Image (cartoon, rainbow, N blue to C red):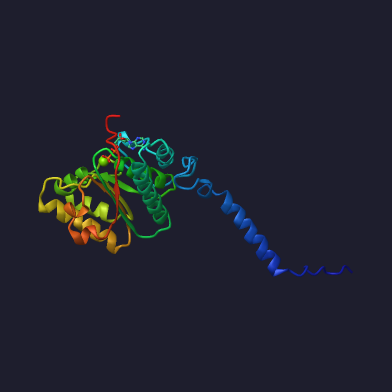
Length: 241
Ligand SMILES: Nc1ncnc2c1ncn2[C@@H]1O[C@H](COP(=O)(O)OP(=O)(O)O)[C@@H](O)[C@H]1O
Ligand SMILES: [Mg+2]
């Protein structure tokens, strides 16, 4: 007669610890954790991106936060360097809040050519590489589409009614609007932009806007402007350098 072998006593703590370390290894090997911190040189490491590609205009497709940070050292004027560093820090902080799912409303304000759009699209790209879906549009384009209808911001050729354009942008958690300006000086644009801002604020979403109009209250009413952390950027006009 053969004796029945009883199963060895299972050490629950040991099993739990083994599972924890296996999970930790998987996590540290995941593509997301291999992405370098925002603003560092290797921010473009390969990763699995499943989110939709944001609309980055050709001019700004190569804009990178890491390159922006590196180029700060070359700025001779200390005041300009400090201003650009403050803007960079504000944008990287905004990105971190966005990746953490926190609400964040940031406005970059400054004269023509100082690098506001460059920073906005570099941030858009950095978030995209981290698999964060970012709705990005120049305001002039969105303002037109809100008025007359237009193409989806997601690169499809589908034509949307004006109300569908509004639904599209208002459904987003991360919205980047470049070059906010009184597009045609009408109450219509002000109202539409106001609704988008209020909606983002109420839903605790994230918005990054840029504008040449300083102070911000000249382009947004004071109650709307007050929802943004405002950063003034200075520097030379780099458009023709
Ligand atoms: N740090 C930078 N490194 C390289 N090119 C830059 C940098 N900042 C701005 N540029 C370029 O200079 C030009 C003007 O910058 P832009 O972001 O359009 O200015 P703004 O939006 O403030 O008017 C753009 O072609 C932009 O790509
Ligand atoms: Mg610009």
